[in-house]
Length: 259
Length: 116
Image (tube, rainbow over all chains, first blue to last red; front, side, top):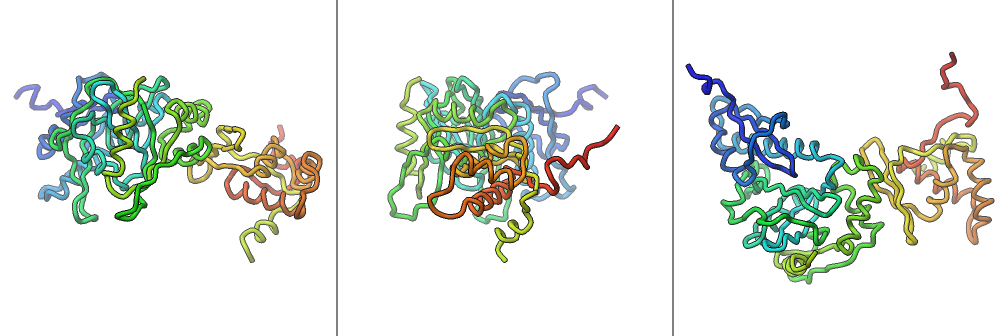
């Protein structure tokens, strides 16, 4: 008997600048976890918050494993958000960066409205920052969260698949990302309708962005902090679109900005 | 009976009004938004000009009757409509949004205070 036989299998990942320890007791999930989280792997940090995937039944089918991996992703996200609460302004958003300058666009939208689809389509050749949560420091620096992409299957009642960014042709940012632009996504245009890009005044921006933030109230004077961030990038714009091609020009323009 | 009328019936002139759990207020020349902690979590609410005046006049606590007197003093009679009805309507809207908490009893009622 060796000590290693009893050692827990743990994968440490970097999420929003925090380290989270994923303990995987079930051998059947070890390889899928390692693969899915390959873009976030980091060194162990003593005292890092820990999470575990849900237990599998003895005869677990692939859907049960997929559900466990999806649940694990949500757990990591929660722990990372908790760890950075009051430090980062965090939005439900997808984000892509320019690989040479770090200029980053944060595309804010509620869950299930196409963030992952946008990232998959517009991300190749750019820095994949996240498809879920964008964390912005007071100086505009973004803490990446290169989590596995949660890819929806054809049947909406089936679990999503957690797929590593690399498998989808996406690369983590090569230089530190910084917030260059903030947009709110609304996929409410019909096929053939022209997309609409409109400025949102700061008061309406606060009303519309607040529901898409995490731990906003953890800040001292949270509305002032959020307003400063919005104004630091020239204000919020709303993109009403139908297809990902409609969003590409705005992404290109924002990623072309300099600090 | 509409919700407003039900609320109006419940909100007497002596009802104590006090601010809700307001975490932050942000104002520009275009208006004011407030971050409020309600039963369903935090929300940001944009105030109408009258709503903003009502919230300010409520201060740390007042009654509906005193609020109306205060706002008549600050704003005068409205060009159209009845100030009492406008204040009641705006107050009910703020109560609905958790920006104001309406309680029973007079503001000098100390029945809830634990005596030594």
